[in-house]
Amino acid sequence: MPSPQPREPEPVQPGKLEFTAAEIGALAHLYRGEVYRSTVWRTRLDSSTNWAVVTTGIALSATYSSAESSPLPMVLVGLLVTVFLLFEARRYRYFSVWRARARLLETDFYAPMIRGEGPSPSSAWTKLLANDYRHPRYHISYIRAIGRRLRRTYGWIFAIQAIAYYGKLAIHPLPLTMMSEILDRASIGPIPGTIVILAGVAFHSSWALFAFITHRIEVIDRRKRHNLIAMG
Image (tube, rainbow, N blue to C red; front, side, top):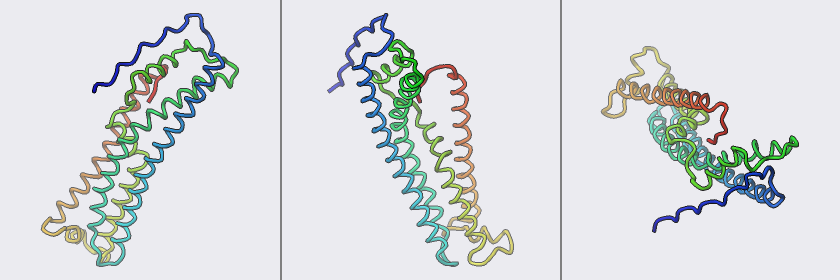
């Protein structure tokens, strides 16, 4: 069954310069609702991050439990953390919607009110917020969401994983005496150590490059809308 089309809103009175007490009360309830939804999705973000940290900790414990332990858990946990990152980026897109709405109300409704300036219903922010409710959409792309979570959280987890993995190869079962030994220790079954090392370098270089590129995209986007009221 197709979703019903939104009803056309009633036209705003052109001479209306301030909100009524009833409208201010409705906006206060709206703000509380958006804060609640953003808090719920913030908790969901934290849960996937917590799982990524816990699984990395388990892999560290298994890898460093003894000198003879295999470094393979550190390789596998990198793949698992990547899955958590993809899940969290999807959740972040939902979170950014509620957060952006609440933030817009804070900066353009409550802040002017606190300064003693009555917020006007005819301001640009009211049109932006109303349009976002009538035509809801994500405020950030999936690619940029992945980049943000990488830079703020998962980049550190991947860095710890990489340091722990190469540290394991360097000190166990005995400290390295020649660099060629690291290739023998890195081999996984029939897969030569050279391929494993190169794959690891490519993996960690790719996420670092991805985080940098998405950061540059965001910087350019912010410069374009520097003087505009925007969400996301």
